Amino acid sequence: MKILVTGAAGFIGSHVALELLNAGYEVICIDNFVNAVQDADGNAASLKRVEKLSAKRAPFQFCDLCNNADLEEVFRKKKLYAVIHLAAIKGVGDSTERPLEYYRNNLIGSINLICLCKKYNVKNFIFSSSSTVYGVGEAFPLKETSRTGCSITNPYAQTKYTTEKILIDTANVEKDWNVIILRYFNPIGAHPSRLLGEDPRGVPLNLAPYVSQVAIGKFPYLRVFGDTYNTPDGTAIRDFLHIVDLAQGHVAALDRIRKEGSIGCEIYNLGTGRGRSILEVVESFQKVSGKEIKLQMCEMRPGDVERLYCDTSLAKKKLGWECKLDLDDMCRDMWNFQMKNPNGYRSKEANDG
Image (tube, rainbow, N blue to C red; front, side, top):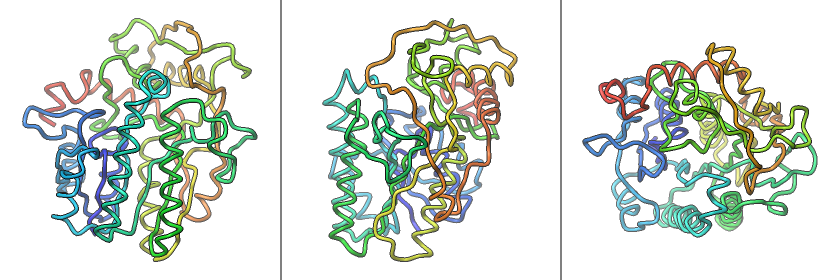
């Protein structure tokens, strides 16, 4: 079964591609390198490592979802069983400064993809959504039935919410479609092999690579955005989960579609079900790495919310999925990746793979 993975060269995409290959699926990988590293030969550095770990091919093609002609070539050449749509530009604060870029990339790209699925009769679709669709949240832990869209605080979240609505409306009309929307909470960590991890460009927008790059000496301190939230230590609370657990959630979703045959549209939270503060993550990282992380307390970022954590019981019941790895595992694995790959996929060791 051929599975098209968009955004396959990125942090989440490379881990998802690996887990799919390990589960016996065939992957077709596309990316435009906005959030990923391109090697000297024009290939995806992360996917070379996926092939090494899986001992299977992960064929890659450069493709921007906003270029409909190039995207259609992928559909024309391959008989696809399903699409796993991960590609998006991501950054809560960044999206408040570049809203048009987010709307153009995330929405036009998604619409192009969904339209081509209809044209080429690809009826199975898994979408990478986000906990940010819940906005500020009303009652915790958040359930899939909690209100969405009403208190969204940033354009990035709005693009995820809008794409959800497009898929829900499409599945209501296309009765033979199977759509699973996965609302991610906060994936961190790296593959335990130390070969796959998060390799951002410039100053990281996400907490985990920022912490590990401070530890290795790339940055003098970690900027903590907000220490006056109404939380036990004043910093924001998030539901952090291991990237490997998250990637395995996609396999569970695909397995459900394959086994059930007709599900309509389903939505699942993917998280641990436990909220951890920013300072708790720093404390765990210091423990497993033995490194002191210096902090600089800053003002809250536009678009950030105080807390987000979820109820994961539906995913456990319907997908048979739950997180197996804890916060120390997440921090240990991301530190091990950083030590082995001080310059990420751009380092000689990474390129030699």
